[in-house]
Length: 301
Ligand code: 0X9
Ligand code: ZN
Image (tube, rainbow, N blue to C red; front, top):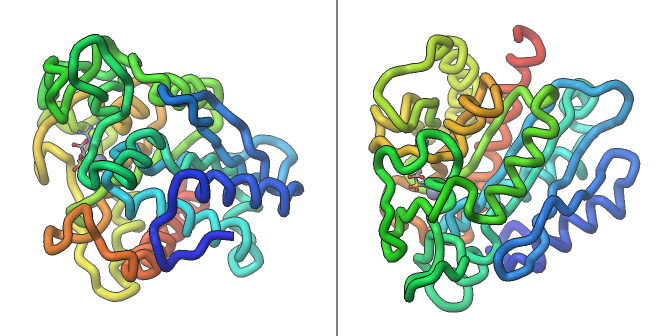
């Protein structure tokens, strides 16, 4: 079993996914969707009561290695969805869930063992520099803006879209479930922002208002927990413009209307090195946000 009092190695997060699948087989199925460059398995947990396919939510974390609060929060969401499901049965009665806690486990482990502020994957490339910024590697306006073609840059987009086995495996899986998945949610840090596409340009999607209204439900429910401030808007408005991100890909290429990137706490005091004492607080807030968003979705969308 995991605790939410410290950050865990990938092995332990992986074991928690296995534990849930083994302990709650009537609602949990684990699927290995691929392998990382260093050979680690990428494990998706599907949470479903079965029967006909329902609207599904995809949640991932750990696209960026150093953003430890993201995988920790995803596992907190798993705890709530699975082990505390009787407190809120509608969440799995009315929806299916696909959860990938760590998209980039090679980088995540490297940030534990060697370089705390590592961001990229750990693919070898052909030069002296290792790794690709996985959130520049998706096939959506790849390398157009806010990304680098220099393998030594921390925002290196890779040699081609989906050069990384991690982004390839994840997107192949999402495409195979594209008719079911209605909401795409990816957790990053830091900044306390709920970001709405597009990330690659200033223009907003035609259905931006719909996306904004649903996100607002999430942000309001989240903020109600302890008045933590989150900003809501596009990445272009709130941070910077960059292409090849997973949210833009989910919306543009997978046709998932509601695609969001959430930048978790804090706003810079600790930055990426958020003390583990914050995990449960962040988990509670994000859990309320996800619940608030999906309550609105099931009632109104
Ligand atoms: O730059 C990123 O990939 C994200 N910020 S982070 O500090 N976690 O690295 C923001 C991504 C927002 N979405 C897109 N630009 N598509
Ligand atoms: Zn990030």
